[in-house]
Amino acid sequence: MDTSKLDLHDANLLGIALDPVSRTAKIRLAYYEDERSSARVSGTLHFRGVSRFNQIVDLELLEDHARAGNVAQWVSGERQGTSYIFLARGLIEVVSDSVELVPGA
Image (cartoon, rainbow, N blue to C red; front, side, top):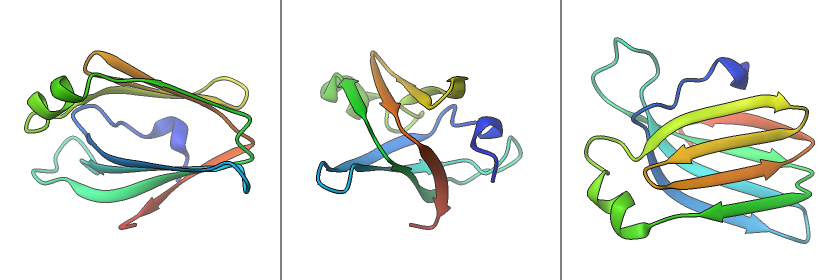
């Protein structure tokens, strides 16, 4: 799937795993496959060749917004290799060589 076309509005952040030795990051989400979907499905954004990972999150606010969705927007490819996940009062920025969505993971 072309991750630049992925719409993560109203998704839920479920977890983050970083491996500095292999330079990977995995972000687990529950998201709507399309605007007609009534239920979220699980998936993982898998970043490889990570050179920078920044996050600032308000965990209490993420919990408060979990039912409605605590992800506001996903931006991939604005700058080559840089992806952004805008959260309810937070942000995740990942600079990587590649990113793919692994459904069901």
